Length: 259
Ligand code: NAP
Image 1 (cartoon, rainbow, N blue to C red):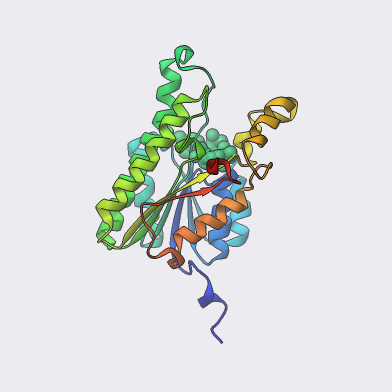
Image 2 (cartoon, protein in one colour):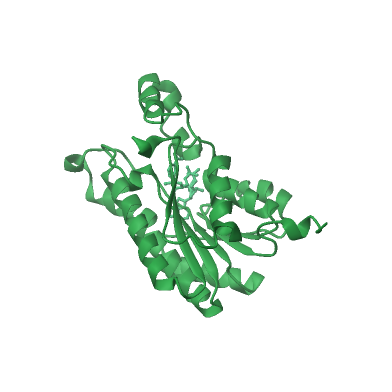
């Protein structure tokens, strides 16, 4: 019977997660750590308040935190270099950092609001992928998973910036998958439905029962998803179980996009 550690799906792999201090990213970090991975979290500056790391370090004591705004290219470049300097390789990258942005019709949307969402949710992922692929092409191995949304495959009124960014991620994913298909690198994207995370808490749905019911009703399962359910999909795409899968969008959405 093989030892338990050898059965772990990401044993000794180095996993880099942007936006990993909160919500979906943190759940993916904990899941990857429990599968034996080294973990590097990149997230925005929080002063000394990086308490999300405590939960991750409980699972993987050598996990590291790198302060990084993904919308700033030099910070992304430095973050990926740090991962390789500390752990020696970059095996899996989860480009998950994102914001929802202030809602509003296109005719009312401020150009700054558009640029701020696109800068993080799309350009930030391009910056990350560029640096990750430089390293992975050098290694001739690696896996990238991007975090889109059901809003990457369907419109959502009053969120044009977010919808455009998340649609863009699917095209970016497919193109990277084609560019790297023979180089030992796989690139896929996850499209979650509405997931119960701090990002959703900001919508204050508990005080808006009608809006909450509208969101729930878009999911045939009539509930929000959990970060852990997204983490299960991430582990599948990150490990060898999905070795023949590249350029694919995995919907984890309670049936949202089946309609
Ligand atoms: P979350 O709890 O707010 O976590 C996102 C993390 O990313 C936060 O720690 C956030 O920091 C960080 N971040 C934001 N901008 C950043 C930047 N410029 N550089 C580095 N880190 C940054 O949100 P979540 O719900 O887990 O969302 C994670 C991803 O899933 C996002 O891409 C989101 O669009 C996507 N998604 C979420 C849902 C959902 O319903 N929750 C559905 C579909 C897709 P701050 O706290 O400082 O902002």
